[in-house]
Length: 261
Image (cartoon, rainbow, N blue to C red; front, top):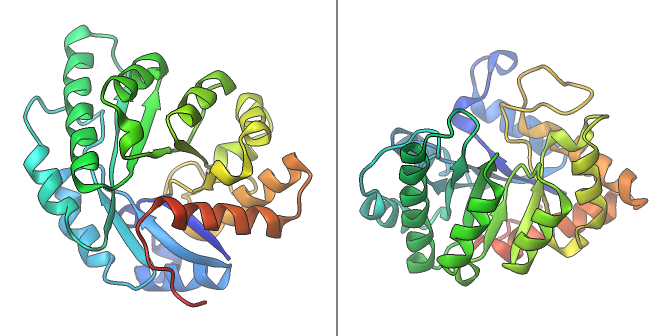
């Protein structure tokens, strides 16, 4: 069995499932996915995700994506929603400079990032980190705010091995998405091969970043198996070895009671 450690279930294209999320989940379970972490990116998502997480195999996180910048204090909101029993992580949060290198824009992102780290430490729940064209600043904030105290995961990792090593030194895990299945993703391939097996997670980030052989389509949790398979091939391991390791890593990081298969 495997786990989709990062997906956005409230945003899936459910056309193939008659608009029924439960059908999509049931199909993924048939494909070997035993648990789903649906991740929050905006305040408005939280009530829907909390409802979705009533399913026994689904947990949720609470967070505010760095590209949805808001120069206000979200700490109380994070602490309130984050205290829910099915909320197992804070995020996704982090820094994303892809759309702007404006200093004020970056400053607001850092402020919001720090609020998330504070909430994660306060609640003793791991942090889900997004970084894009901002690796140096992301690591700097994580170090300065002592994020090793809450631990967490660098989700949908696309940086180089040096950044991965720095994150591992902070006791963070590395999560790989469908990008690892892309033929020219050489940097991600190196990380997939070098990261210790007991520090790896797998995810879809669905509905985004569908893996080969479904690249270009709307992604879904059932396809996390392709991520697992590619990592196994890159490392010269059996699929079952990577599946077992990444699943165990997931339950070691997140405060989730594992359901019987």
